[in-house]
Image 1 (cartoon, rainbow, N blue to C red):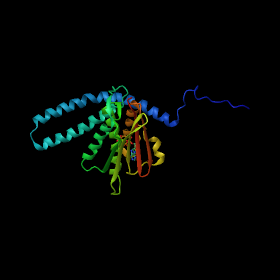
Image 2: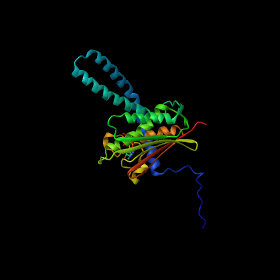
Image 3: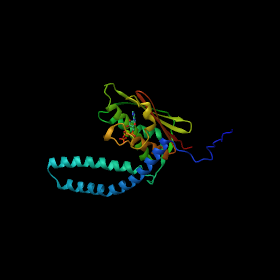
Image 4: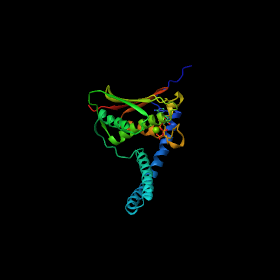
Length: 245
Ligand SMILES: Nc1ncnc2c1ncn2[C@@H]1O[C@H](COP(=O)(O)OP(=O)(O)OP(=O)(O)O)[C@@H](O)[C@H]1O
Ligand SMILES: [Mg+2]
């Protein structure tokens, strides 16, 4: 008896359980984000203004110290709001022409300047200018999320051995390739397929499991690719962004 031949081209694409889980989470997340981002904007702006007024009225050093703490916490909340907004598909995307080498170098210098950085950073790049059309603030968020993961892994390490963080920018065909390598511990093989899922974290309640999800979203908006490979204790995160011809 002849068996029917399935043609993938004519059938709508069946989602794997993993893709399905990803999509469901993403849809509910988007709705949640839209409501939260909208509702948080007002009170946060109000609190920032009140804080500035309070600074003018308060004289006592102790009270001023409390205001510093308040400002620090408010900044954390404002950053979280920005992060949530960057999840929102409707946010405007503002691409400009960027030399990727220069951009990545700026971030590398920031890690160098961090006081008590747990990473020893090495940066290499090709001589050629690699120009991409990118939204600079979003791309910075993507690299920062990747770097923060390496920092957090390094901070959580039991051994005293220094953690090497290598950043490399080079040309790969029609793409600018940025790769980040750390040797802070690596990722267990069974966890790898879940790393880009929203809310997937192995760090407990102090983290939200959004860093890589956001990085991936930003890279896809730029028509790029992102992947993670790991062979313990190493992790490589590679981003390819299309070059402007
Ligand atoms: N460089 C790395 N080395 C080892 N594990 C990593 C690395 N980067 C990411 N991971 C793993 O991937 C998970 C997801 O990372 P992601 O950045 O999305 O979330 P998070 O860091 O847990 O939380 P958030 O970024 O929202 O603070 C992490 O919890 C961690 O288990
Ligand atoms: Mg993270």
